[in-house]
Amino acid sequence: MSKTMQWAWDKAEDKLNEVTNRLQKGFITQSQAIKEIEDADENWALMGFEDITDVIDYMTKEVEVLGA
Image (cartoon, rainbow, N blue to C red; front, side, top):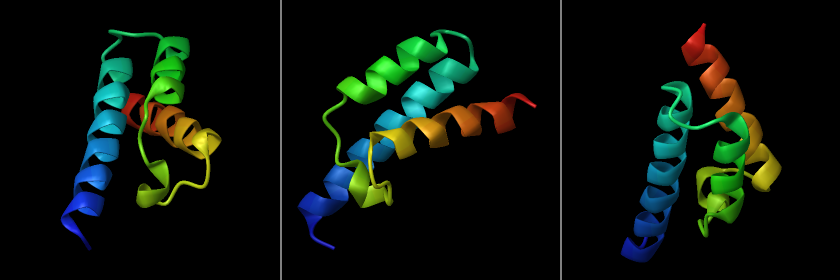
């Protein structure tokens, strides 16, 4: 994998983890988290997501699992 692709992957992963963690801790609401993910200029496909809906579904399910 090229360094640029790895950088883009890391950047997308870091953004998703950051938003998920803030949502889990109650610093932001679910609608705020969704807005942040939608507004993020990340290459989600590098992480295996087909579209933004997949990213949002993953994030909300991850928070449900961690919160249980």
